[in-house]
Length: 194
Image (cartoon, rainbow, N blue to C red):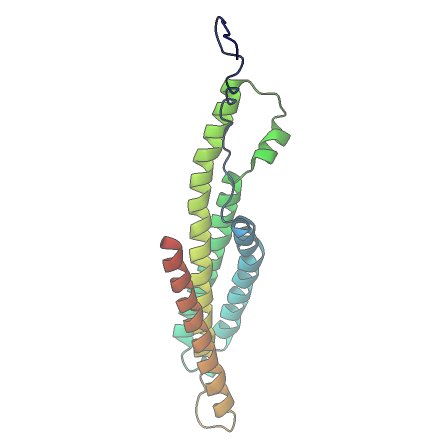
């Protein structure tokens, strides 16, 4: 073992690690952002149209439904919630973009200042986009519950008929479905908060 005299770094010392790379925002948990985009882009728009059409049908024949006023109110609120879901999803998508999309729009190479600026912009936009995504999810689930309650009111029979029993079963099943949806969403939300 010899003595090494060197000016500067010792040749036997481990190499210095490279400077830390920028950690770009990625949607987590994976799959949640595309699921929310599908919910607000496809399902929300479809259900908004369905709720609005149902409002139009009930408004033309209010005397055929036992609680037509309440059904119209709930279905109108459901349609509004689904429209809000679509709008929140639009606002979220405008702010949720990936590192790959950035490099597609602004090809490499970047200076260190450009990279830091793009990284900071993406981080700020992602936080705002995440809030819009959460709003889209809340309005979607709220709309589902309102839609279930409105349909249940439409199904409640009027007067005496042999068809009353299946209508009551359908009304209770719809109410139960809406209640289960409400419970599962609240339980999932509580787990996410932990």
